[in-house]
Length: 160
Image 1 (cartoon, one colour):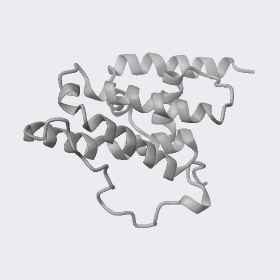
Image 2: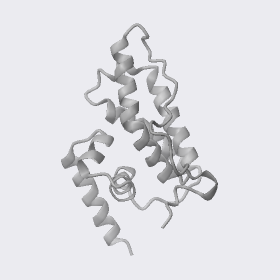
Image 3: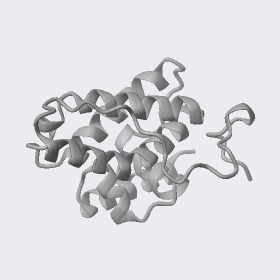
């Protein structure tokens, strides 16, 4: 069965490149090579998941990849400051989901679940991430992820 996130016209190539494209990086303080390396490592780890998540929410692989790249490029400018946060992943996830939600609302359809609960379902069941990996992507603890996921499942079960 095909993934509705990929329409016929924007399917990824059968043999995608081994390293996904990443946004051009100009971290805020170019004199800090450690911050630049940390940013590149962060993008390498999370950009593919962010693009897949955004594609699933927006139902377009191209729009999802573009939005993920835009958010990561925006974060690059203040990356040294992001590194001072308790969880840079949580900060970037909040920015990403905010942009996805704003874009999705332009095609408004009533939401059945709060965004954070819907995100747990997308990450677990659409993208196939283990609970621990999904929690890491969202920048939350595994127990918080589990609570949100269970609440989403209960809410869906109660929906007529």
